Length: 64
Image (cartoon, rainbow, N blue to C red; front, side, top):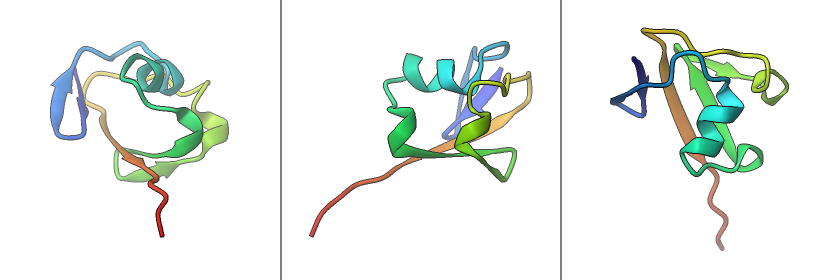
């Protein structure tokens, strides 16, 4: 189980990119924190989530 934005999900074994796509996030428009560290976008494809990981996804919102 992986905690995504405070809720447990079956995401272990997926890459960060797969997790974002499966949950309706645009990888170009979010920031991802993995286990309290900001994950660079260049690592989304190669980072595989493991049981016990904690992920926070923050979407960018434009306005003015």
